[in-house]
Image (cartoon, rainbow, N blue to C red; front, side):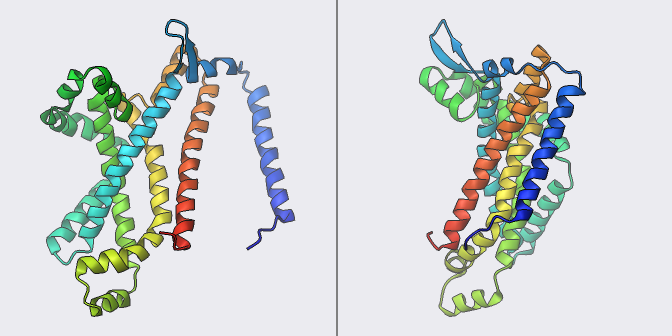
Length: 291
């Protein structure tokens, strides 16, 4: 369908531009603030004369940590969400009660409180039992570089894992509800028709129900994946060196506040927009039956 650009669209765009211009004008003339944008690039990328290489600055390092945190947190949340979502539609009462207890417990605890509870009372007891901290510190050479690239610096692995697990637990409860709602949105006749064909319960779910349910789940799932990126800033309170934490370090050392917050906002915006565009593309391909 051909998209039309109406007069109303023009008016809305002009109004938005005027509003942005007014805000910038007020920031520039009313705050009595001395802007210093020149300092920002050095905290994104800088040239190391000793090694003669370009190296990422604090903000870019925090950005990469946010990406790693979001990817692992999203994977864990998706795994938990699918598992709990399936449990919530099970015929077994114990599984349904367990799923409902998890969802209600997590959804009714603020994310910041959950971060502190898990970090100080749960991860402090569980993660040392896995000996990941000791293993990561024993790495050297390329193994250490790969470990840092895919996960975290070995000295920060306990905080990183704690943040990933907290994000996964928190977002997993919301994804579980999306999975449950998506499956239950499929008409009962689809189950009956696939049963009449002699398919087992697993085959019904895999070949008939899930392909239809995923189309319904995708828009709210995209929203939760984006929320995972935004909620990752909360774990800065346990000293995980993600984007918000690094930004506050830069502000504390330079006293350049507004420029750093605007830069952080732009970096989060780029990451979330990229994910949103990817999911929109995936949704379009699913609607065209290309998968």
